[in-house]
Image (cartoon, rainbow, N blue to C red; front, side, top):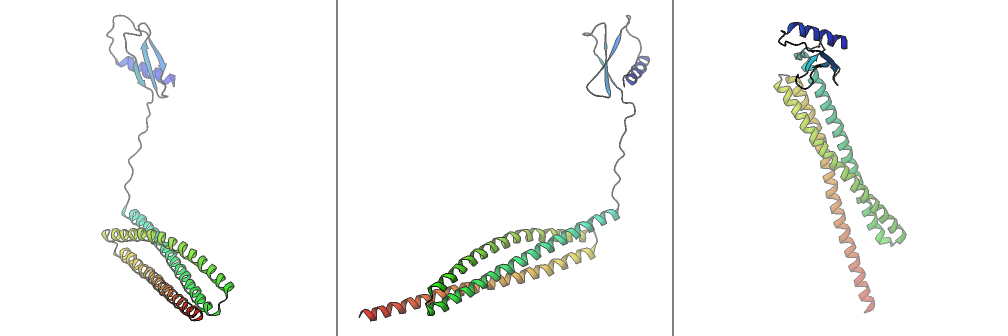
Length: 234
């Protein structure tokens, strides 16, 4: 590299006119950069500023990027659309499964409440304890399933917006077939998720009715027992 710097220096000295009456002895030094050297006056370091020489004669200039073609853009859009549809379908499937699990646990709890009422007539304390243990466990399962379905609802809403945007982009890009296909998938899955959510709502309403019925039955039994106790005392 020093040889290249010296050649550059010689070319520079040949191209410059000699304006100094006295000879100047130039010295070559290397800088911290591998392609740059500097020259300074060996006779007087303070009065003559150094000359900086770029020793990189064959600097490569990268060519400009080639713009994407229409076919390449369409291919990238197809990949993006497929990924958005796949993500939307997977999220919807997980949400429907969570809704079904949530409703299933609710119906289990309703059955345990019914069994508890039936056991009141029998008066089996051991059986009643087992039933209430199952009721507590099922309530915890319902709580976990409900938290899971709420998180999936948020993810589903985001993927829903994403697929709508993909469909709009397809329409603006004059790809009506892709736009219609995305909206058809969107509508079908929305209906499926809506049906699962309605089943969960029906289960919640039935659980509320079962709990009210349990309270009424227990209150009636307690009232009858109180009357019997009063009759015995009288």
